[in-house]
Image (cartoon, rainbow, N blue to C red):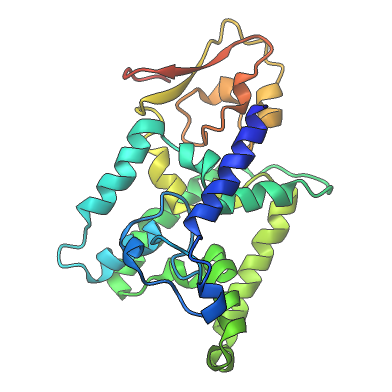
Length: 272
């Protein structure tokens, strides 16, 4: 079984697990059981009718806006523990929105790369929108326009509840337009949301250089054939950015290097 196939199976099973409260699509309501107190490790809307877990970004905005101490050490500890073990490994192996982007990119259309400068936007989104704007306005503005939220929660809930349908207006139309724009972008670029916007990916990326599970690049062996970039879901050249790159989602596809220049390592030393 190839690494790519293993990754697809893991993504699919994770997506099903994170959204296993299937009765929500029958009742048209949101699951509110005990599991909703647990954060989802991947990017998945907690308002989806079948969502079992809470969205960590939504939870962060909630605590920033209304928490007594404006921080949840439990939530930060949860995300930090995942990041310390594998960096952005969740992005590569267990993110429902990542799976959607990978599937849409398979559509046969002309392809374009995400501009390098746009990869920094996710840090702006994290600090300015998720933290800054939420703190000052007391509103979860990222959740209001999140394309994953529109896809998993907005569309299903509105379609199943006539009362909600009557309340839709320009804001809902804007949310649909943002989702449609990203969907089109996903067909021509590799994971544009992950590369440019995702605040959860931004959080995990801080751990890529210090995580227990990492990639090691032997530049002496590297023949710069660019096969690693060809198979990379986020379009990076690992031999240039290094195994600790903040953009690497730890899918490990590049480890099938013909020169055996890329290896999975388990250690505690900093790498560049």
